[in-house]
Image (cartoon, rainbow, N blue to C red; front, top):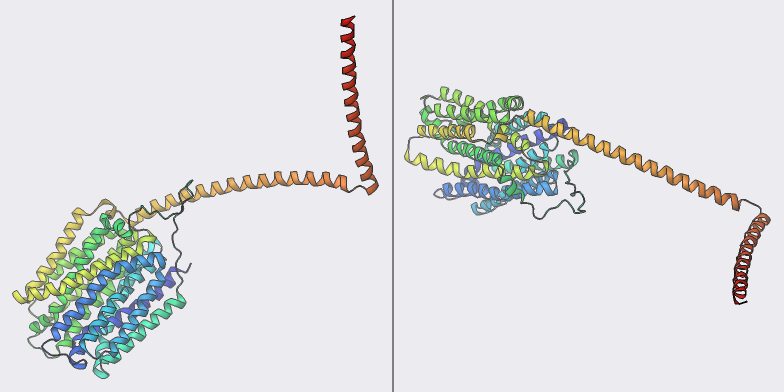
Length: 502
C-alpha cells in the first residue's frame, strides 16, 4: 500500500489542475457564446442558463451512480474515467461551431463529471483516521487555489488567443491528471466481507438494502447532504449578482471584470489559507463543532455584507467570509469518512456531490428571481440567514453519532480491532499447534510402518523365502491341529453315546 502522504501530494496537484482547468473556461462561456459561436444577442442569456443548468442537472443524477461504481469497480478507475472523459469534453468544446453543439457538449460533461468526489474517495482509502481533518483541508485548499488560478489564466488566454485555446489547454491538463493517476497511484485495497460462519455462503447478501437506501437511512448522512446542498445554493445564489453589486458600490463599470475578479479572489485566498486550519481543529475538537461554527460564522458575515456602502470594506468582509466558508466542506467531507465504511465511501461522496449540484441548480435561479424584485443588498441577509438557520438546526437536531469526536471513535474502533486481532492470533496459534501435533503423530506412524517393512524386505532373498516357508508351515500346522481337535471331540461324543446304549 502506498504512503498516504505521497498520495495526498499527487492528488493535491491533480485537484489544482482540475479546478484551474474548470474555472479557466466556465466563467467565460457567455463570452464564448456571443463572440466565437455568434449566438443571437437576444438569446445569449437563454443559452447561458441552459448550458449551466443542464450540466448541473445531469451531474446530480449521475454522481451517485459513479460513486457506487467506484466502490464496486475501484476508486482509481473512477478518477481515470472522469478525468479522461472531461478531457474529451474540453477538446470537443474547442471544436464546436454552434450554441446547440456546446449545449450537447455540456450534457456530456454532466455524464463525465465526478472527478472531485472520486479524488476525495480515493484519498479517504489511504489517509489514517488521525489525519482525516488535515487531509480534507489540504484537498479543499487545492480546490480553492485552482479556482483562483483558473480565471486569471483563462482571462489572459482568452484575451490573447481566444477561448478555443483555453479549451485545448484545459483538455491537456486533464490528460496529465489521467496519466499521473494511471502511472503513479495504485488502486487501494478493498474491504471484503467474510462469509457467515457455518453457512458456506458468499458475503453477498441479496436481501441487504441498497447502498443508497442504507446511506440515506443514516440521519448523519442526511444532515450532511442538507448542509452541503444549502451551502452550495447560497454560494451560487450570490455569485450571479456579485459583479453587478460591485459595480453599484464603485459607481462605475470601468474595468468591472478585473475588479470583480480581484474581490472574488480575496475570498478564495482566505479559504485556501484557512481550510487546513479548520481541518486540524476538526480533528482535535470534533468535525461537528467546526461544521456548526463555520456555518454560523459564514452566515453572520454574509448578513453583514449589506452594510458597507463602498467597495473597500465590502472586499475586506468578502475576505473574512472566505475564512468562515472554508470550514464547511472540509468538515462535511471528514464526517463522511468517519461515518461510512470504506466499501460505501464512493457512494457517499457521490451523494454529497449530487446534493451540491442540486443546490448549485437552485441557487442561480433563486438569486435571479430575488434580484428581479428586491434591491441587491437585501439578498445578502437572506443568504446569510439560510446558513444561520442551518447551523441552529444542526446544533439542536443533529444525531448523537454525528456529535461524537473522531478521536473517541478511533480509540473505540482501535480497541475493538486490537481485541479481534488478538483473538484471531490466539485461534491461529492453537490451530497451528494442533496441526503440528497431528503431523508429528502421522510422521511417527509412517516411520514405524517404514521400519517394519524395511525389517522384512531388507533380508536376503533366501531368508525371505525361509520366512515365507515358515509362515506357510505354521499356517498348515494350525489347520492340522484344528482338524485333530475336531476329530477328537467327535470320537469322545461317540464313545459317550455307546456307553449310554449299553
